[in-house]
Image (cartoon, rainbow, N blue to C red; front, side):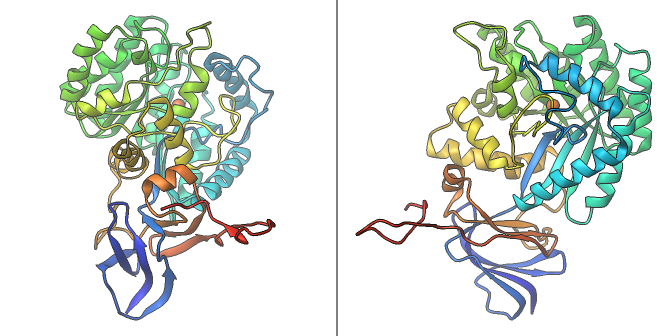
Length: 422
Ligand code: FE2
């Protein structure tokens, strides 16, 4: 007897299987005939482990237009706008916006998010707000918080002290922003400092690293060195790495083996990278996405992140990790069927591994979290970015949506149309 049985779905690897759930765990996967408290018929539909976002800014989300829109569209104007907003936003306002975003995420089958939290201001209201949100959503959504010194670890008098205060308050992950420190040398020193803090505290480490078009921004080299020095491989990630787009190929041929040796991961954020980078160029205009396929060929884990939704840096977004993968697939030219399938894996399993999520997966004993999509397979899911018919978090159905087919009024044509194919 199962509490919940998801019948006849197609798993991302193409296997057709029933999934039997007891309590908050997957109890069995295969052809299952047992009774169940509730049955979800997923025949012909894709049943996937939940989507995972390893890079987000939940303290800023859903604030688009506050205090005004980003007129230049640049990263630097976004940082400046956020600098104003973070000092006028109340804890309650940030909690309310973040909880609304988490509702969107759940409806999209996005059940784990790593969010960077700005630790720059002495009031640390963003940290207070995100700790409250983490507590409120804990029953159904894994929220990891990164202590993120947005204005630089050393560029404000209390930058370092406030990052440590945030970690003491219970923030999970050490952040960083070396390319925004005053000098290259201070950027490198910040990485040595932050790597030590992560190692000493036994924490994960995720750095906004080289988010610039400057090909000489080479902080990822220093980060990889510190990850290797402290044995942080498997617990460290470099986010963005956009300067790698513009780097000299000979230098990259030395850099990638160093990153691979460290076992750190990379988190490009294609919606944001393609929007913010190259703003100083005329033509040809660089698009700023890091070297995804080249890193994957070296065995470096690469996951797609969302970064922003309706905030000072980005004016769109729906909490749909398939949108993120769809953009990444285009910009990185990952159009071979195997590469498209890998893009789906990047926003599910790879991101879960980068975040070190426990119990993630579709095997017996895993946490019973999954999403049923109106698509036949992962590549079709990328093409359609379809309805999430059901979302299950730790054994509980947390979101449902009716299948939504269009009705046609055309003589001699079928009455309903579905965009699924083959
Ligand atoms: Fe970011």
